[in-house]
Length: 154
Image 1 (cartoon, rainbow, N blue to C red):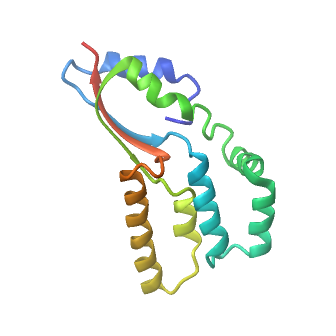
Image 2 (spheres, rainbow, N blue to C red; image 1 turned 90 degrees about the vertical axis):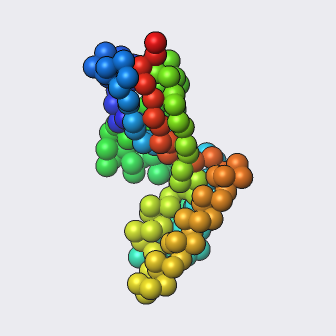
């Protein structure tokens, strides 16, 4: 959903298409909180990955501006309406369940790029997931993705 330009129209069309007892279920990027960026970025920088430390340093120095530029070059619509997704869903639907996940920023990049032997890599990633879930449950971090179950407003 965060790639869609006209989200309000999309939400209205989904609402129209659903039966009264129908469900709209989605999981999407809702934006990364600053603390999540710092925590994930620090982990990514410190851990051994297939990305050199020189390249990581260039990314760190370029900060959010450089990351957004890189993301936009890969997909011009990346995170175009990230901040509006939940607000628009609440305007158009009755939210039945809302759960945030992936609080440690760049967790997918860490998982994909980490350079550990297989058995160690998967053990580490399981522990990272537990830490991530724990941080969200205790509200130390906000998730950058939401899983939402909703139905049309009556």
